[in-house]
Length: 154
Image 1 (cartoon, rainbow, N blue to C red):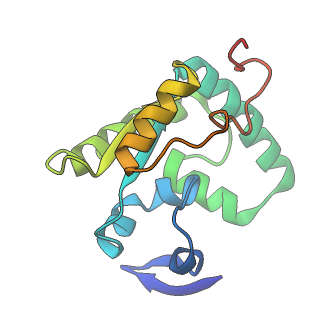
Image 2 (cartoon, rainbow, N blue to C red; image 1 turned 180 degrees about the vertical axis):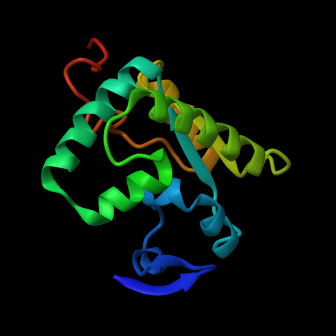
């Protein structure tokens, strides 16, 4: 899976054949990815802090149980901790969101900040499709990994 390094960061073969990269790898290496793929656009999803912390607690506790060294390394890079620590997570989240905003501040059209869970799926589709210049898919806006506590009412 690892093909090469970019400024000391591994690049994934997947990027040679895929249209998108999601999750912690994109979070951890957004600057390097922006440099390596100058025509790429970035979407940063955001949600309210309470539901995010609940999700992170479940996620990090499960990861700790599995003891996956790769995920632990990614958690350390992004969140500055391998275990659920509310204070560190809040600080890391605020720092990351500020860093992303600053990185893309002078390049309109490169970053979409997309609030999830706080707006209707139709609005999320509208914003995302407008940003990407694509037609809206004829499916509900995806909410994979959405727990019962954070599911929007039907």
